Length: 245
Image 1: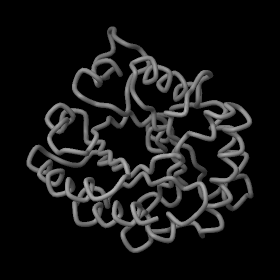
Image 2: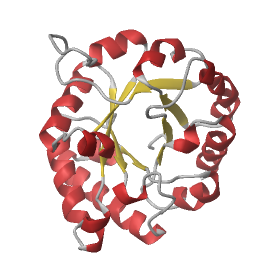
Image 3: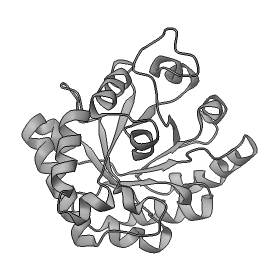
Image 4: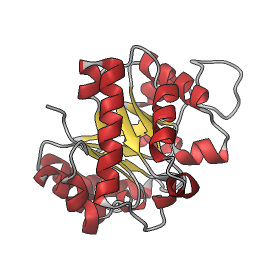
């Protein structure tokens, strides 16, 4: 049985003072079986790691190399040393703002796996691709190109329709279910039993008000949450909804 996962991506937000929110999230994390993960900006990882019982801390990105002359970048081994247990790879904002290709994402994901960390690989289509009927083609291509061979059931995949991130727009439950069923089938076809064990998260304007219905969709094993993960009250309500699903 796949363990549910509530993952929060703080993006370029937060401060040491804001980490007090983790203390307030701890009771929600302790109230059920769902795994809880927060990914703050890199400078906050070491401070956040181990601060609140039951909350794992991850990174939002990493370099594909383990070390070297890459000013401003952070490697997966360095993140592990700081206390990170997970790393997000291939987020749409990295793909768009930094021009990351599927090959780039696969290299970073391999680096995460090599460092013994859990990779949260993001895939998803733009509004133009959705309206052109290319959603499954785009997601399938990203899955094939972004996940390296040898990935195990520990790997996590997050479906984040680009047009729904931070916009308040959410796909219909039928659309979410269609993509998640497609991803499951693709992962099982490629990785067998391991593919069936990989957790699939939905990401895209998840809020306390819509979490319950989203978590009721088949093959949705949790959520990758943006803005709503910054405040314990909001993220806690999402964690409660996931535990109740």
